[in-house]
Length: 200
Image 1 (cartoon, rainbow, N blue to C red):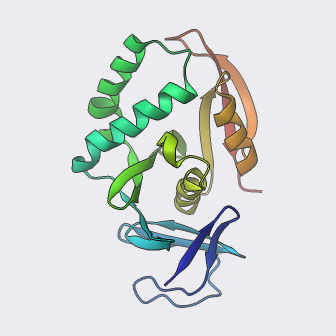
Image 2 (image 1 turned 90 degrees about the horizontal axis):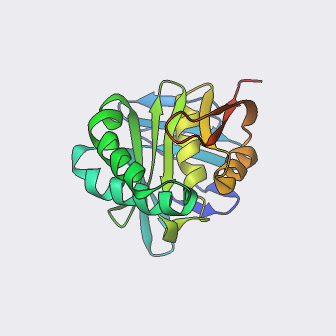
């Protein structure tokens, strides 16, 4: 299978996943840790599916313990850009919480480039608990690919974002999330916005 990764999404050239070859497939197909959902001119991929883009090999697969250090580095570097209003003490505590508290209770998918973690998304039920992309790989469709993966796994999605994180807000709004409520983040005092992506 060759999937061309473009700014418009994943263009399907041919299709195979563990024997699946029906190009009329329109609903999520899940088997093991692999899922595939196809829409017209767009494909959302999760798990052990290799994509070729120019000279790079790109893969989305489920998180494993050995990915922890690279995942944390992606989170930290992306957080410095998305959340410059958070102090180092808060980020240090969050780094510890991610490893010890959050990851053990989430379903996390990572985006690999040449075997290196460059992005990830974590789900707690229908909630997108985290989605981060390494700064050098941002604006290349990786965030959308990870969200496509989550969308293939869940009928509805919810996400909370700091109001001051304008880039994050734009990303969710472009993807189709709608604002549902606002509140104050207790730990930081920062305004928060809750978005939802609901079945129409």
